[in-house]
Image 1 (cartoon, one colour):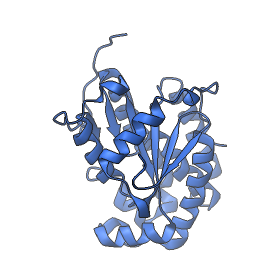
Image 2 (spheres, helix red, strand yellow):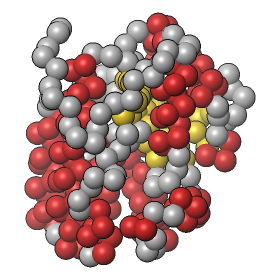
Image 3 (cartoon, rainbow, N blue to C red):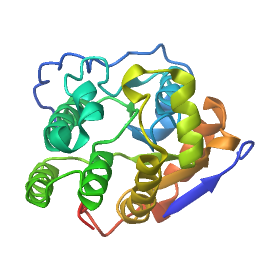
Length: 248
């Protein structure tokens, strides 16, 4: 089930060591998230869609841990954008490993949290790279098998917020934030990525509740918290399907 909104709508286990670069930001409690119980919010969206901005705002507003995508310490990032075909598999395995570590930390800590990019989205990039010839088909099969094996140990987020932005909007956002490694991303890459996101949302919404947000009508943290509360409490979010297949 996907919910589309516009502005104005209203067992204990040992904690693993924290991975470098993925330490959560503990926020001072704002609006207590007691109505949610223990909630794990994942934010999804294209490059530059505003995931980190919303994650930070929600974390502060709800007073919950905030986890950010590992970017600054990604040792493959510059090489990936310089020679995508050569580094695509290494990049995707690196990200999958880091994201899995972060995802499991959220679960093992047992506290409410918001994450600014979910582990499931890595499969969008891998699939797109394979479809466009930038990843060897053999490497892609290996990646999918690895993802499926990891998924046996993953607990799903309570809800995914999808920030829907066009390829052109993504390109504009990328230019505005001026990260050197992203400067040469072509529009064709973003168009292929958007197609992958559309397929991903259609698939993941059968497993995890999705709230789709039009970026041009971006809601405030307060509005988003209310929408999440309302939709999360909806019994229609119960699912019979328990597994997301990255290859579909």
